[in-house]
Length: 133
Image 1: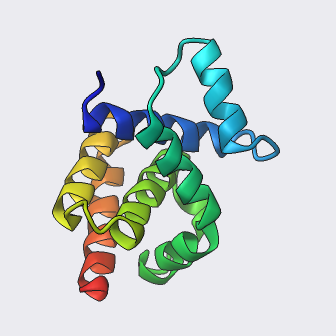
Image 2: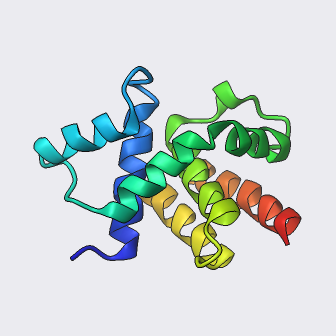
């Protein structure tokens, strides 16, 4: 059984992969990742990645509004996938504390991105969290 952190990491992997395979659906990417044993079965991971993709316009608008004048194409694909995941949780999952979503995003950044990315991600997410209160 996966921890919630591991499930988030799998959702992140799906979203990161989606940034390179825009023509494939998240569900197709999920099935391919399962078949290739890149991830293990997780309804939460799949549903979270699908929910991000379904609400991409709203999520990306929040990123653009709060990213200190950074253009979306200047943000690394890793940081973008991590922020999309956390913003989806902040906006659409009332049962997940905002602080948990931000902390998990920072931890994913520390694992997969550069040092500059996790402080940037933390700043953007903190600003969005304050707006949502």
